[in-house]
Every structure is written in C-alpha cells, then in structure tokens.
Image (cartoon, rainbow, N blue to C red):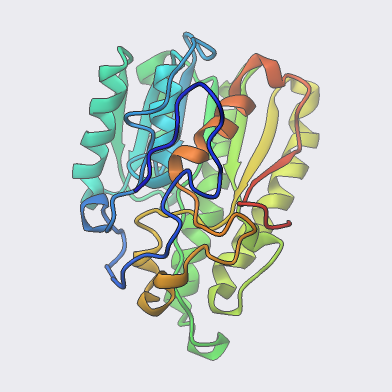
Length: 298
C-alpha cells in the first residue's frame, strides 16, 4: 500500500493509497481487522494532531475498527479523551484502538455491549458520561450491512439486525445523550453514499443510511436552538473490515474502482472530516452531510 505524504507538496490523490482492487475474501460479522487483507490504514503512522479538540470528551459507537478507529486516533491526537463502544467479540480490535489513544496521552474508556438492545445502548452513553463527567461529541458510527440476493430473501431477523444496529442504536444513543449535552456540543453521524445512490444488493442498509440523513437534518433543526450541532459524513467505498464481512468476495477485486479517483478510500482519509465537524471552527455548520467519496456524487 502506498503511504500518504505528510506535509510538503500534495501527492496525486489517485495514487495516495492502493489503486488496485482487493483480494477475494469473506469473513463473518462482526469482522475483525486482523482478518482484513490488506490491513486498512487508520492513520496510525500518519495523522498529526494540533490540539484542535483539546479537553473534549467523546463517545464513538463502533470505534474499535475501520472508520471508528481512524476517528478515535485522530480525536485523541487532537487532544480529546475517547470512549469506544463495540460488541464483545471485537475486544481485540477495541484494545488495539485504546492503545493508540493512550499513546497519544489521552484517556480511553472501553464500553463493550450490543447497542442493538435498548438498555445496552442507553448504558453505553451513561457509562461514557459517568467516566468523563460529561460528553462533548457523540459519533454515531456503528453499522451492519450484508449482501442481499433480493427483497424476498431478506429474513425478518436480518431486517431487525440491520435496523436496530443502524437506526435504533443511534436514536437510543442520541436520546440518552442530548439531555446531558451542553451548548457547543455536537453529534456526528456516519451516513453513506448509499443514502443517495442505493444499491439493490444493500437494500436494507441503504434504507437505514437514507433515514440517518433525515435524522441528521431533523435533529439539527431541533437542537440548533439549544446550541448543539448535528452533522453527518457520507463515506463512499472505504476499505474497512465491514467490506469483506459483507459477503461479496467477487466484488472486492474491483472495489472502489468506479470512483473518479479510481480507487477505494482508507479510514484515515475520513478522519479529517470528523475532526472538522467536531471543532469550534465548524461552529456555523449544522444539518450538513459531508461527502468523502473519491469524487462520486451524492
């Protein structure tokens, strides 16, 4: 994998990372970083912080790997303490993420639990608030997707898993957090290009991401008068453990090749958008959906 340049003249974005596809592979979900070939770049060796989030207290759902890990590393290097929620089978990934947060000199709180259960989702938020004494940024990032053969093949239990993970979990989390968030706080949602360009084989996932865009805009309108901002990031094709866990090994050799930049993105390339939306510099940005898609249109 080509390493992104740090400082100096910008590198050609078409060549900043791996410009070819990925080897065929398939894993169960929740998928783990060690099972993902090649390993995604979360910015471990490249992200440089400058204190833009100094002293902030953050909770990231699904923060153990992929986009969540990249955001956790970036936030820690910008000066934030970070709580990470994850399902218990992802303990190894979560501890690895925690080690990077702690290397940045910040505090990490690990919060295992299945957020598709209401009591667990609420407890995760309360535990983060209790540990830090408050919450300044809530990143609603946890998600589930699976390749579908057609609507008639989607079992009700699979609908429940997708909707509860991708929709109920964020709503339960926000509902628990908002009463305890103060003016200046923000909520950042991980949406998707699938909300705007839905794929038939990701039908239920795309539905939830479209709903999250509506959730972002409506909640921004509700919370604006309270001084709380709500925004979303819409990733395009990003190489994370979720991708081989989607059960489409035949698609991986061409994954991301259809973008104008001709390649898939890496989690490290998402983190700066999340940093911006959490900083005071974005104080007039609310209800926005920021695309990080390699040039694909929303």
